Amino acid sequence: MAYGQKILKGDAYKRAAIKRRHIRIRKSINGTAERPRLVVTRSNRHIVAQVIDDIKGHTLASASTLDTSIRGAEGDKSAQAKQVGALVAERAKAAGVEAVVFDRGGNQYAGRIAALADAAREAGLKF
Image (cartoon, rainbow, N blue to C red; front, side, top):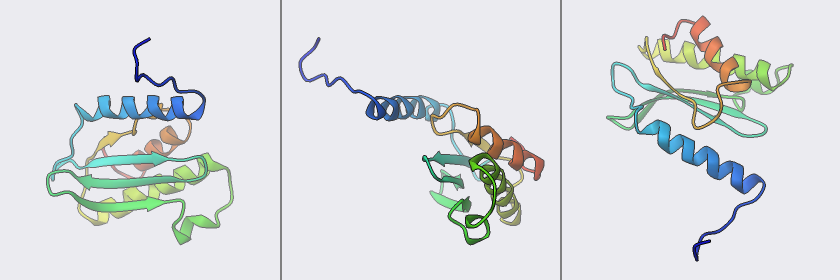
């Protein structure tokens, strides 16, 4: 083993793996004015989605489970992720965005991430 190499365990290992995957994904994904990037950030309790124009560095639309319209909603975390997906798609369409590039943030495309993406597609965003 090389000196200075720290062996990570448990949650630290998992977060480091997610960070590595996110860096690898971002090499090929970039948001433009015509097709901004839909970024999904997931924690154990909440999920946040943002539509970002990387060229200008501006957030065009965002939604999360912390919004007042979703915060007191019933259902499990996947149901809340669906509501966030529909809300971010509605706000993005109001901002004039028709198509986005999906950035899953290093997370697997399953569960809450997939539920958010499917709800955004159903609401009219093109991936």
